[in-house]
Length: 446
Figure (spheres, one colour):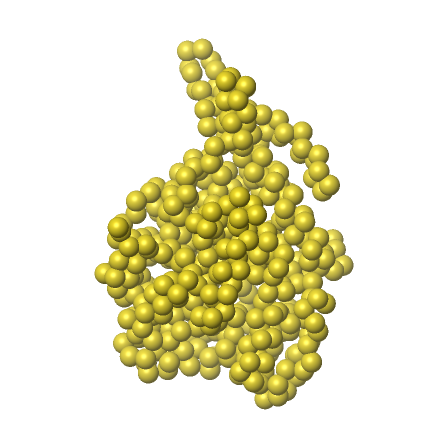
């Protein structure tokens, strides 16, 4: 029996995930606005046979623009440019269910799936940033539970829109003049609590049937949503025990939705600092930590915790924090940061240093072999089906992982040596999805 292998996604952000990456001499800060930079990153990931690349998104500049911004390009647009220079790597874009409409978003992802020949994925987020709410005519973040209720209905409509064209709908018969078979293109006449959509989608069914569905929230609502809808989950756990608990909890929720364990892949994030020796790797990490701008980090931490820390003493512990039930933004990230500070008895300065690499994701400094060991231990302990690699600086950090860590994983039989599929769903071991209307048609004909 062949050894079970895991999945690897490259989470790409600017010139690196570390908040001070743009200031470090290993990066070229000018490339943050250069589409060729991101195309190069995707080609590096494809060289390593990674499953996918992924872009987060934020719909506001926020209060931190003097020091940094997390996103520059709209990700679906950017991934369309990347699709043109790659062949196999999956392309996952973040898009919010709070500040989009199902029809427009379903059309964009269907277009990306066609442009990329079946490599599109959607990271479904509900948006918990008040600055985003301000940009869409709201005075506050919508209530956490209501955001997930909207997300459920939003995804239901999007799935129906992708299904509105059956795979055989396009005919293109030049002799008879038939472009499409109208019996295989379906209206929805959907009328729900939040959306009314007639349909059909004005983009034919994509090569995958629908994009890979990804989710990144770890709150109770987020985990339940993921168990129902997601096919991959990007998550943040800092210890192996936390990873195992999250993995078991999430997988235990699948049965109630009629899903098997392998229907959902769990991919914790890792920020790897890689060097020839562990001492060199730790020294490299410290170089980035030393470049953190405290005022920027404090504003970012304030956003995570829902408390204004901009005037708080750096060498003091955190002030009293609100209960999780009072947080309407990112509940899972709030809990992660709060527990990190409390469990390790950190000052604010120490906390922002630990968060600088990946905003709460696990950071690891070591040799290529030690990084490979760390991934293998999490995988074999039942804490992960794969990993979301968040290079602290780009392109060098990603190239080091691809050229120095991936070959070790391949030698150990833990990762593919070549692509076996042309689609993103195929990379994750999933089949193309057939239209729900095709199933109805088959029942009628029978």
